[in-house]
Length: 257
Image (cartoon, rainbow, N blue to C red; front, side, top):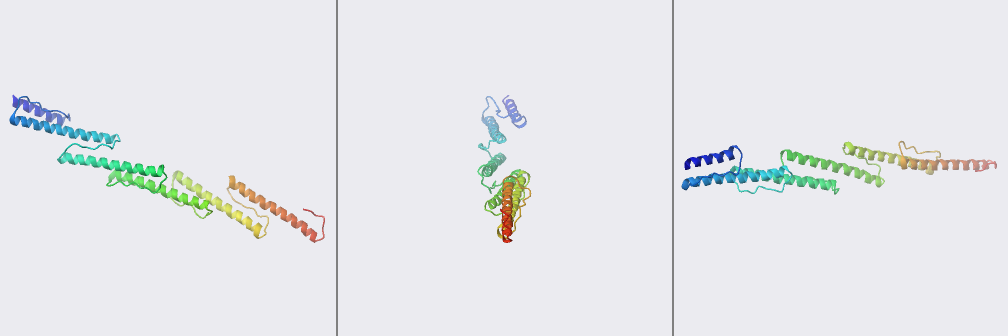
């Protein structure tokens, strides 16, 4: 009877743990002693260890699935179970490192305005390496674009209209680059035309010149019109004075300014 009970209990625990995935079961064999007691305790010890190991692994992997990377497998294990534990803990470390690095780069670039940062994920392979590479590519492209636009804008502020945004860009960044380049072109055209009119009128004595800046609007249009109005008024005034003085030189005193 004891042997039969022992066999039934061991079979039940083996079936529950090994086939049905029901953990926590224990063989209950009443009145056994000696070898049979040792065997029962060994079976129960195996089932208990397996229960603790699987549940700890499940706890950690469930936490990872929910975005909680603060947990590690701490249960004692040996052999292939230990290899699995090491693999899962390494996975958690890599995911945590990946999350920390991506968060750091996003914070530096997106919030603090610190450009040039790169995510450094040690030992990343497969999809994690691809994700790290994509984040770094994004950060690198944004750094190049912003720095190029900043360089051109700074040059304009310093009166240098020779530079253009040349970095490759798409979408709204490309629109911004085009806007900056159009601004530089407009300012350059404005400066050239005002310089030409000033030189013609002020240095070469050529009156009647007008600044022609196509496509200007707002303040630049107002400034262009002001320069042209000044040049036009000066032309009219000088020519009228010249007409009167020429008449006087010819003995004609009937004319006035």
